[in-house]
Length: 139
Picture 1 (cartoon, rainbow, N blue to C red):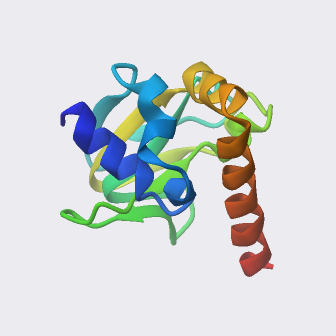
Picture 2: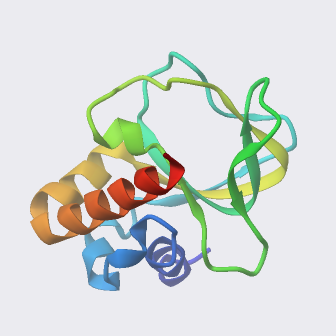
């Protein structure tokens, strides 16, 4: 996946969609594609959260839970962000997530994502507003 595709997935993510492509330029070259095979751990409960992930294909589910927490359909540029709590200062994963089938994801180093938000207060505002709206809909 080239950097243009990475940026397109980030811009079209459910949570990040309020940001502009230029908001992500500082992440170029720092993101990488990861592939997780069926049953592979994506994140492990209690470990340090060093990255956030955007699922661009496949499904991730919490260990022991039936429903998926992040899903993206192949060919659809919209993804699902994993790791919002890490952006808020909680530095450990609160639960384990496993691939349910083959999963493709974009891995973004947490410090790079934090730096992007720190350097761009407008992007931070848009992101937090989207998160608050999403949480409100769940309540």
